[in-house]
View 1 (cartoon, chains in turn yellow, blue):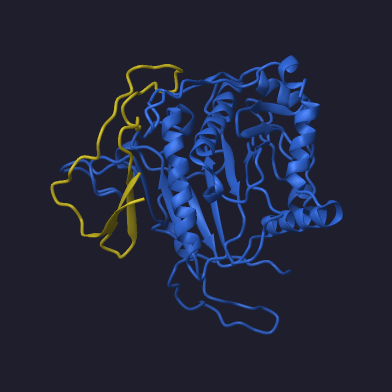
View 2 (cartoon, chains in turn cyan, red):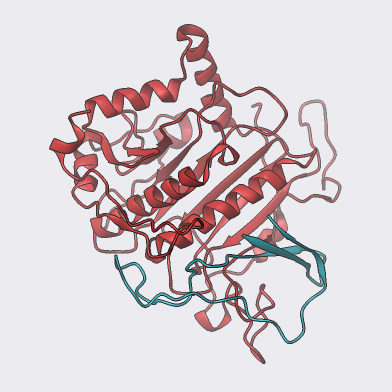
Length: 59
Length: 343
C-alpha cells in the first residue's frame, strides 16, 4: 500500500492510497459477480498538474 | 445529561443528492467539473470533510458556557473515505480485493488519527442508502475522530469490564463461543471472523461480525485476518442485497478500543450493521420507545432472520494473487443449518 498526501486550496488534506499488483476498482462494472474475469490492474494516472505534495511514503 | 452534542450549523449548506454529473466524490476529469478529488483516477481516497462536525483547529464556541451548560470547541477530525472511483458502485459490488484494500486504509487511518493528542476515539462507519439519510450516492464511508469516548462505546466498555471482573473472561469471546455452539443465529464463518445476528438484536437484520481471536483494534489484525475481515464484510453485504433484490441500506460501524492511552485489553473488536429495513418496503422506525427511552422493540426473531441471511450466503472468490505469490482461491462460508449447528 502506498499513500500520497496533498493539501487542497482551503488547507484540507487528501490522501491517495494506491495498491500495486492487486486488483483495484473502477474496471469491472459487474465485478460483484463471483469469478468475474474482466477486472484488471491499473495504476494511478499521473496528473497533468499535480497539487502540492506534502509527503510521500510507503506504509 | 452527561453526553456531548456537536453543533455544526455550516453543515446545513452541505451538498445534498447532487446529479451524477456533479458528484463531488468522482475523479476530476480533464476540463471537467472540479470535484473534491483533483486527479483523474484513484483507488481509495481519504480526505478531510468539507463540512466537518469536528475540526483539528476548531473555532471558539459560538455561545458562552455556564455552570449548567458546559461548552468547548469541537476538536476532532472528520474524514470522508471514498471506496471507489465508480459513481454507481457499492461496497457489495466491489471485488473482495477492494474491501481488503479498504481494511488496510481503515487501519492506516485508525493508526494516524488515533495518534492525535486531542483524539480519544476513532469511529469508522458507513451510512448507505437514502433510507439512512445519505446526501451523496457515490460509495463512501466516514471517520469521526472524537475528543471523547462516545456513549454507546462507553456502555460496551463498561459491560465488557463488568463481565471480565465477574468471570475473568471477555464478554464478546463468551458471546461468540455460545453463538457458534448454538448456531441458530450464525450467518457465516470463515478462518478469523464470524457473522451473526446477536441474541439481543435491535434491528431485524442487525448483523455483528466478531473476530474469533481476542483483539481490540484493526491494528492488531494480521494480514490474513485483514483478508478474512474483508471477505466476511463482503459476504454479509452481498447477502443483504439479495434479501429483497435491491441495494440494501445499512449503517456499518467499527467498534474498536479507545485511543486515549488507557488499558482496554478486556474489549473485543467487532463490526456492527444496522439495516433500517424490516421488509422490502417497510422501515424500522426509531420511534418513541427507541428514541425516548432507549428501548428497542424488534418485531422479528433473530433466529429466523439469521436463517434467511444464511440461505443467501455465497462463497467469496479472490481474483488476485497474494503478496507472497500464493493464490488465495475460494473462501467458503457455512451456508446451511446443518453445517452451522454442529460447532
